[in-house]
Length: 106
Image 1 (cartoon, one colour):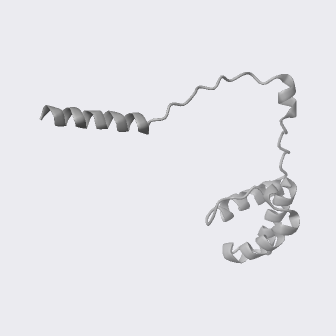
Image 2 (cartoon, helix red, strand yellow):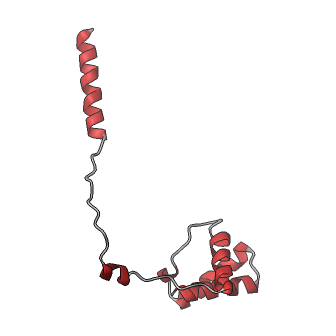
């Protein structure tokens, strides 16, 4: 009986040690002044672009993940938005607003 308990304990310890991963701590350093200036600040959105962003995030994310605007070119976005307009039941004004927002992010 003791040998079964010891064997079971050894197996559990072996599995537990193989199943856990130790992560190395990464030292963080403060960004330098040049690193801060290299970070691009997002442009302020106009009310129309903010509405387009809102429509894009709320209408498109209902069915799939949101893609980064830079993933496709402006020419590639046109047929995508036309196809998705029907599926998302968006009118021409709404899709134009989304298109303007995506174009502004390219």
